[in-house]
Image 1 (cartoon, rainbow, N blue to C red):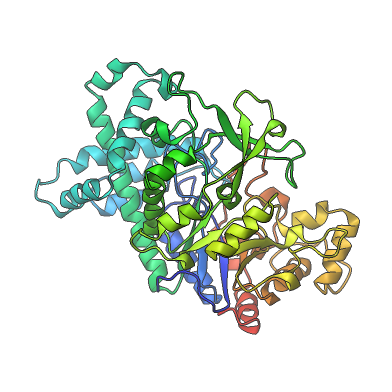
Image 2 (spheres, rainbow, N blue to C red):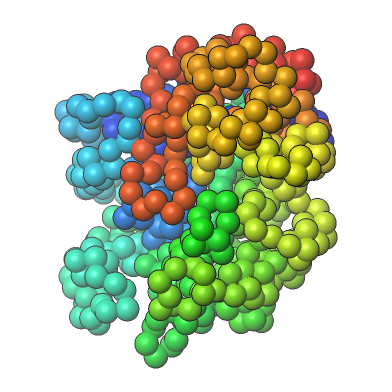
Length: 504
């Protein structure tokens, strides 16, 4: 099975690859990923939603890395390298993490994985020239046109001591180590794409489709920006952005969110047929069965903030590419609209609703946003249309149990009454939490064609297990699940809920 969204009622589970169990301080593309697929299939789920698989930034966010195309080398499974004959068992043992299995340790994983991958790289080029492995690598370099530029960018970044690319000296390109280091970074991408292809095939063969997440914006410190300056609102002389991305004040922040990403120059992109965007989406469609476009509303209109602002309140709305971008997508091999989801949460207006109607993509609803004083929220499950992806919570939300504890009393009372919660112990969590189940079932009953629950909510975990707090720069993206916790999930309950509400 490898499919986009269908009109049949389906259910999915949200879990970042970084959160998978395993011995390496962070989740990897290994046997644990396959076991997770087996588990959710047994419970009657059809989709596994992951967070972006690209490089992370200094705060470990997967939404703002050095490339919109590249994968995160931290997810490469050391055991797979051993099976390929590229490293030894002792090399793999160096990557075993001695700390807690409940949180990801990015610093440890980066240090150990870099050492391991350098060893694998040196051994790789000791293979016979006509080996099948080397042939696949040469094919990868030919097929992935972006990878050589990315490798060069990463090499120069490392040689510069990680200084900003707009300050790099020209002599860096003449450094004798640059070419070899660039090829190393290309090799890492080859391993990433090869291992992920195996996991995705396993999932598809098991009846599970993968939903991936594609951030709308990219980092200024990226190969994409440094190589495509004219596609962005950047001064060609100073190489600094005129305006940057963010969102106005909303549910998550009273001062808005100042993301700082460079903004696209949509008029110039329109003139070149949106070539960069088409290449980007093609890569995403090669990685995933379905792609969720994060911050979709920015394609209708976007919040543009003067680059020297202290927060997002000084921004203003500007017009995005709208339907023209989606018309350009029609020429991408393998593209169909049923392979896209629009993340349309947050502050939005008629232009976003019109774009959604015009292009026909499903939008999102989150039950945690439903229980306001109006009693008329579009996030109330009885208001969901069929062409909707309904969430118990996303990576930016609190867990359901955490939300119940922190909600205003009237919000919590409304939520519990709406969901038909029986009893007075709403505060209890755990694998059989009655309150967590009540809110989950309310989402499952809705008309939405796909309902998604996070692993944390399947376990009834509290707020200490949430993935991200928007606007908080530190302490996020660290949650990890253990094999024991996954095995303690009530498989029979979720199998029955999926069956009862026709999501199988």
